[in-house]
Image 1 (cartoon, rainbow, N blue to C red):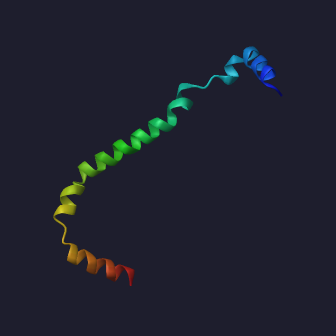
Image 2: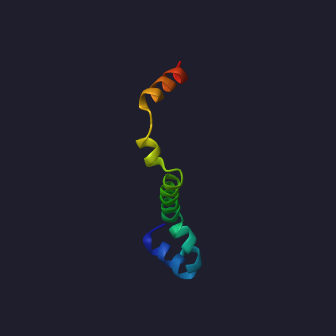
Image 3: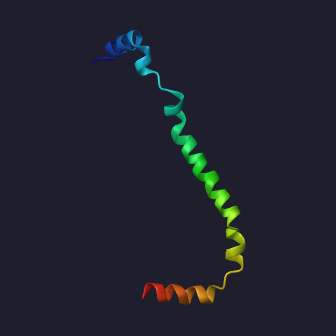
Length: 68
């Protein structure tokens, strides 16, 4: 099949080669929603404040117990 045959089929059946808006923008929209959800969760659970106030010596002991 050459380029002329493909163009001929595309002119006879244009709906078969037209992508819907959902198909076209689903991936970027999904990525954007994941990023926004990550920011929302970080704000809701105050991740920055929790990491700032964390007792890292105790966290190391918990991690060592968990691994062993």
